[in-house]
Image 1 (cartoon, helix red, strand yellow):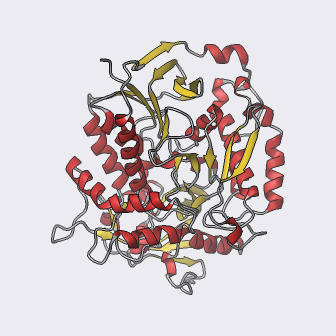
Image 2: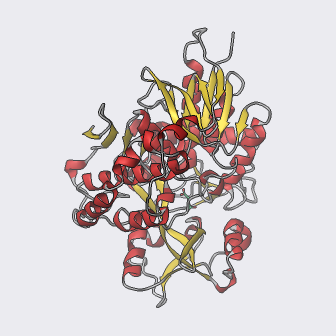
Image 3: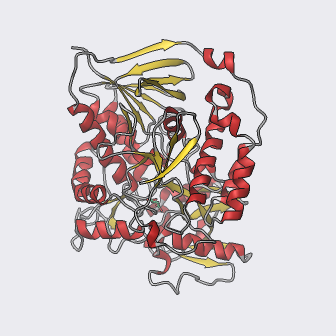
Length: 515
Ligand code: SIN
């Protein structure tokens, strides 16, 4: 009997784990638009949260998760995920992940914002993501096919089922397609994200007819390192867990008046930094109290060295930057999307385990847990004997050269600046409407796939996503977690558990529903 085929789009942790779990039974191909290691996962400085400490249990992890996320969760998903976290750590150890350990050989646990206890496991200090990826790539050697520099341009849909993808150089058909493309921090001027995080999976899914949810909830990380006005990388929250604290250029430790000081939830810290910046102050992370900074945080030290920042001086300039997209492609408890045979895992998906604001170090956990769910579901699906397997047809650029032409648009930097201004840490009706009106001018182009030249597809997708995120931010008339409205500053009980959902209607205009 022929093996079923799976296309995994993206090479972060969620995609690689899904591929690893399927590789023995399925014919798996991984498509990635840059290199295998260009991903947010590879940059991840934070670790993986799991209730494995003596003073911890899954219910505390659960409570911290829903408190940070403003009770906007799928409670069952959260419970299952945090209950399974210790087992996932064990399975990573079996795969060879060398977690950092203390003198007694116990996994060393760090503390990050909004966790009441130490529960974050790291590898090589701030190199957890890279260590996971390296380990999974080792496991995948010779078991799957890999195509780097392969950009997926659209999902192929036949009779409401996803049957494969069109890439920049071929059509590829398979039984299942898995979106593992990450989030869309690159839509913003300041971001901690990899260059790959442009939201491809979200727009691919939307254009194919899948449902999107919670797009308004963008998490800004308070401490993106700034040099010469540019974001150059992340200063992990783990630094504040080890004694670093925020000061302004007058030396004032402005988080001191908050109950958890510098370890308040990210949305709160980001907004306080914004207030300082708006008042014309600069903001720094004072790292002078962090023991063994360069060896404990080698990745951050390297970022600083590369950019001529001398960490021995004890301060690093920081500002908030887009870090994590809580919303995305709606998925169920098996990581299935609303389209048949299309799965989504990792940041591209919205499983609602993060609610309105993700708890630090829950994202690698979510990626691994739902990768398992997706793989298990595919493995359990009945074998029909009619599997497609994996088939491809080369037809370079044909479709685009016939129907499309270049469209004159402002630069992506312009779009990013406008996103940061209108749909950033603070939002309000006036600037959201202004931005939507600006985007409206380009709508005929970015909404209509047939008009988009393949050289402008990534830009068109970012314009479309900007339009959807802004519409979502305008639609939610309250403040909650990663969505802060100046004109609706309170968290409103009327909005509890209400989710804004987006999808294409038959005539290809957007529709909104509450669920
Ligand atoms: C960090 O290290 O501050 C980021 C961790 C995370 O976002 O989970």
